[in-house]
Image (tube, rainbow, N blue to C red):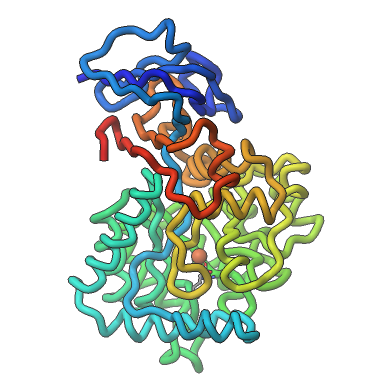
Length: 389
Ligand code: NIG
Ligand code: FE
């Protein structure tokens, strides 16, 4: 079955016309796209479009690659609305709230966790996210981390083992013992269901040597590294990420010149999570400095019950434009192709020939409306692997 979507006001391809490879931000005006067997078969001017089995008239609307949300924590129980309210009344954010979510998650049955995950994954899809990454990290026992990852894998292939989120209370007097567990028995139980290993490298979570040990053990078990880095203050996270060849260093809120240089000289993507700064009332990362240095920048939601409880990539794009001074083109690229780079995927985040047929249609004539009309439900249609959702 082939599908032709025609009369597209602006088609964002992130690929030169006719190319099979992802590339920089690129658009075609008055465009059409053909999907065949779930992948992109043709793009070009609507006037030159070939015939197809089914035709959709976009009526001048914009069409984008589906959003790639490369950072989310969706396996949890409970909520922390009171913590958010207290923050807005003046209290600072600290990673201390994670413990409450760990308690609630351990106490929850699989069905509670699964239905929460399904609800959040549904929210994401309705807002144009066609691929998302999902971490464990609120279980922090062998059994609870393993079941968190098994549940995540019911919803996505991009599953991340985050046993090294924080040291749980029962190991407060034995950090080394917890790191050994994360690198040993817990990893053995989790590696078969995960693709990635992550560590929260931050004061109050894990130090540089602990983070290196977690990433090295994960790599030895076949997991690829990514790092929560430099979120709450300056620190070694970015350097650890680059040294480990991580696909992504996430947050990047407090960076030194050496951190920016290290990212620029590496393949490690800087994934910015502006919803976190919004929701914790913190300074935003300096996206212009990273872009100016030639660093590959992604935007993701970090959807979690503590530091940022949004599942909306359109909201994150609007924040990136307004608060981090990214252009609308940079922000949309970062939320699509940037996320694909952060997950080391070449089949998503762009609409070159052969790319997966993951599309978002906006009820608007251009990608700029994602920031120009913030908070407005602009998603007029979503296709995943060629199927309308
Ligand atoms: O990415 N930084 C660590 N973890 C999450 C927050 C977790 C929480 O507060 O529950 C984050 O911001
Ligand atoms: Fe996170």
